[in-house]
Length: 330
Image 1 (cartoon, rainbow, N blue to C red):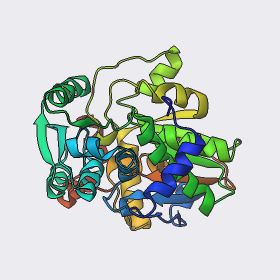
Image 2: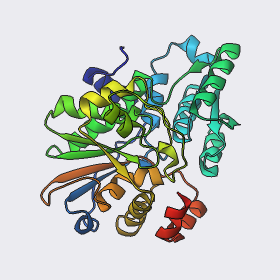
Image 3: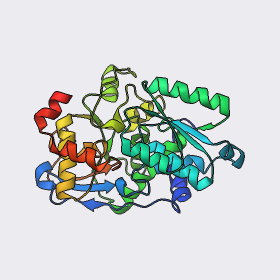
């Protein structure tokens, strides 16, 4: 495989992982539609077997490795959901998994990862520092490194979401994808543009971490100071090296979403769709509520809800905060 997935890679991934994952449903969000001004559909990956979409890419990669490389064990870094996906894959294949997680990882994601049998190393440092530690450990131990967004096999696995959306809603006009490292949107956009070239693909990223938006404006990848955002799963300071050219080729728009709108999206999903979404998953709905993405009343818009792996106590505290408090914390 090249540094980018093809539609053939994505369709092969879909066949490969189908026995182990859920084809999550596509849900009409009728009660949210008056607030966003379009026909809104939700792809709830929090209903996935690990509570997030990341199982798709992790499993697609692991299942392609030869037995001797699987036996070495897997290692990676993650903000939590890739960690759980890779841990699930390791348990399925009977091999050891080690995850280097940031100290800011929500406690629920850490607990879920350990419950799947993985060893968790909490590391105080930015993304580059954590990956330096991953490669150091891999060099010493021989573990197989599986990157959460740079690996084209991971991108292909995530791209299976795009195939499912078009299968369930062939006349969809726009798909909104949360934008963190870029592995999800790279795979999804590749699938959507190959199967329906005229579709609009929009990436939604936190206004506090506008790495792709700023890079697109600059015409090159730029690194930004790492700032905290409630959408912890999208907290990256620099675009992925391999996702970057794919996103430039296939993603039509990149929308920046304020913290208050992200939380408003979470509230709308809980109140009106009865879905518990972590902040990163709610960013697409938040973008629509805040007017960051222009839509028409007759436009069919699908947003991917990437996961729901936050502790209920943490979610409750966030729901209870006033918008002014959220802005101040930003």
